[in-house]
Image 1 (cartoon, one colour):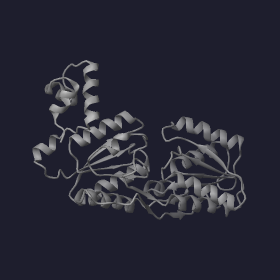
Image 2 (cartoon, rainbow, N blue to C red):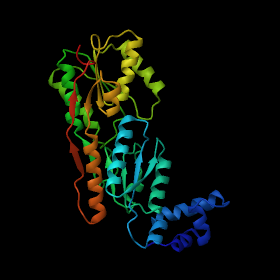
Image 3 (tube, helix red, strand yellow):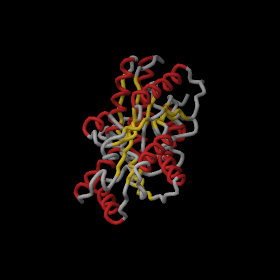
Image 4 (cartoon, one colour):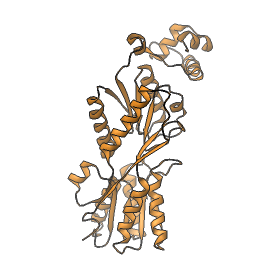
Length: 327
């Protein structure tokens, strides 16, 4: 097991200096900090404060790393995870990774230092190699983070096919999909593939507008308005409900009637959307079941570190037909 003194020896500084860098205490040069963090990363040293005090006992703490809770889907998922974990005797440390990879790396170090029993993450920051180096069990929601980290998702391909088929069945011919960034290996890409396959089957042309998760609502509005005014789709499938609401708002501003002139369907179907935007047709993800499976897989790893789990776990979705699809 790597010790604090090993880090000090590699960085050629004192143990006290290493401790000050880890705890961000005192005045140190950037050169010294860089040397220490370089040694920490090379040795994969994990400060183990709580484990020392608890003498190897479980902390009953689970780390949650998500982009934020202002998005209804993540907000409902995090709340559900917290409630279900609490019922099982666990407490959570919630980390908001936003769109900042360095912030996410810092949270990973912090969670390891506090010796959480496991981590559930739904990050949108890609290319963070530290996930495969962290020694605690990890389960991912919707994102590919490494070859040995299991993923829990809904059946995105089924959802993409259901949404697109519902638009084709209305007689729509110019069906556009509005997606987030389609990153390699992420299961949510299958929503796009479901759309493409249904349109190919029906001999209809495809059109994609990609709006990255990090893009501001103001810039999204500009892109969506340009789509509506210059390309004139008669139907739009949004792979998340918030973009579908933006489409609806802009269509209203431009006197485009939904569903008479534009059919619209979203994706996620959170309780917030169902209660406050009941006219929006959407594909509903089973959030309670997703949460329960994430927790079950994590606890299995905690109880048996040698367990072998499948790479991908997928849960069925369902279609909610509403006024934005049918008059």
